[in-house]
Image: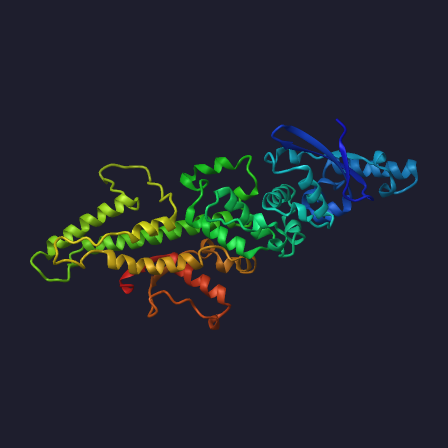
Length: 414
C-alpha cells in the first residue's frame, strides 16, 4: 500500500513514518517535518533526535552529513526521496481511535506552530490531540497553541449544546480534559463537579486503575486533577458521614431529645432512633456490622451524592403518637442539608484559573484537613465577599474548610 506523504513543513529535513492503530489494523502515514522545530516543541523529540543520546539521533546526523557531502546542499532543500526516514512507533500503542490521520497531522502541525482547522474542532478530536501530546511529552504546547480560549465559539452547535448532566462518565471526563487544556473554564468547573458528585468507576475499591490500559488521556487526568477529584469526593462523603453520626449520637446519648417532657419521652427517643437507623439503612448510607470478628473494610458510598441528598430530604416526620409531631430528625436533617447542598452547588468542582495559578493553596489534597468547623451567624449560607481577597479563591476556601474539617459542630446549624 502506498504510504501517504503530508508536508507539515515543506522545508523539513526528516520524513517521519507514523503508524497508528485503528480497530481494523495499523495504518502508516509519512510526514515531512523539521527536526529543530520538533526538538524545541517536545522534550521527547529533543532527546530522541539528539545525536549524543540515541541511535536515531546519530543516524539522523549521519544522513544529513551525507546529503551535504554528496548533493552539495542543505537537507531542507532536498526532495522527499532524498531525506532520511524514521519510524515512529509510539502511536502504535495509543488507544484505538485516539490517533487518526487528521489528529496526527494536526498534532505535528501544532508542534510546528499551526492551528486547528474548524472542521476538527470537536471534543473527541481534541481528546485525541491531548492523548498524543501526553505520549510525546508536549501537553504545554498543545494547550498554549490551541484555541486561545475561544473553544465554545468554534465548536459546532451540536457539541456546544451537550450537557454533562445526562452524559456518560467518558463524556464528562473528555469535556473536563478539553476544558483544562484548551482554556474553557466553564467546561472544567461543571464537568469536574459532576465527576466529584457522581464518582468514577476507576475509584471504586481501587480496582478500576487496571482499566486505564488502552484508554485515552481523559481516563488519567493530568496535572494532579485525577487525585484531587477523588480526594474531594472522599472528603464530601466524610462530611455526610459526620452529619449522620451526629444525629445517631444524639439519640444514643443520655441526653433526652424529646422536648415534650411527657412520660413517653424515653419511648419517643427509642422509637426515633430505630426509625432513623431503618431510614439510613434503606437509602444505603448506613450499614450495621458486628464487631465480634475482624472484617474487611467496607467500601465507600458508590452512588451519586446529589441523589443521596434527594433521598435524605425524603426523610419522613416519624412520630410515636399524635402528641409527638415534631420529635423526629427531619427538621434537624433539612437544616444541615441546606448548608451542605448550598456548597455542593458552588465550589466542589475545579476552577481553571485557581488550579492553574493557585494550585497548592486551592488543593484540598495538598492543604490537608482543618481541625474543626462550625456554622456562623449566616447559618453557613452566605458566600464570602471579595473584600477578603479574590472572590473565587475566598469562596473555594470556605467550601474547603467545610468539607475537609476533622470535626463538625452540627449543633450550631440547628
